[in-house]
Image 1: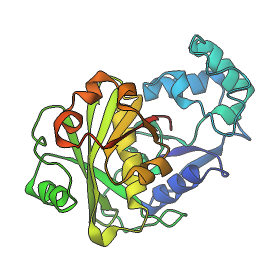
Image 2: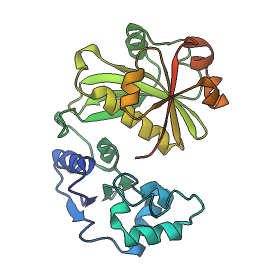
Image 3: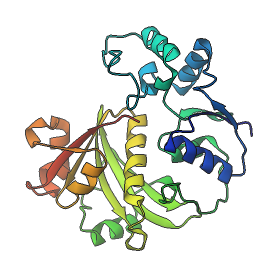
Length: 274
């Protein structure tokens, strides 16, 4: 399989993506785009094939994003492309191209959507946490048991509008579950649990990242969580506590917020940028 990776060696996510691709037995063609930037026409074609606006591939952290005023939502795609051509460091990474499509692979596990995944062996990211696969699932007794053991609500699992995933290491060992409810551009992350024997490996962070990306791919732009015990964990992932008055009505009207979680539960929010 021909695989092209627009790579930045200084980026941990980009390095992890290369590591994961090679673990599948594929040797990609690596383009260090800061040294050899794509042409304007090629970058525009890649973004079009991704099916996202130009803004979705602009990196903010560690770039001249703010000083160039790129937070101005009135800027057109053409103006944003001008900025990307003038400052290639603004191009987020890694962008991966395969016969199955084009994707900005953040988190790195999303590259598996573009590869012929068959049998794989467990592999850790360079920071030590294991790579994960996510599989969409229906409500099952396995999910119910895991949530009840963790003291999480289960009464609304079969209500409409929920998406649930099983998470496993690359070799197939299950490590946890997660889900979300989508309300336009807002998503409520929920039902996140790491199996007891898989804790302490950074798996919770990876589940939160993958879950957020799946919600983002369906149109979510802000993620919310409700928790009585895990606020420090979510704050470490970039979520900020907010008052209930600041949360959208759609989030407050969910069964989680209105009924199943106590009124004392902390509400946290995070813009979904990758």
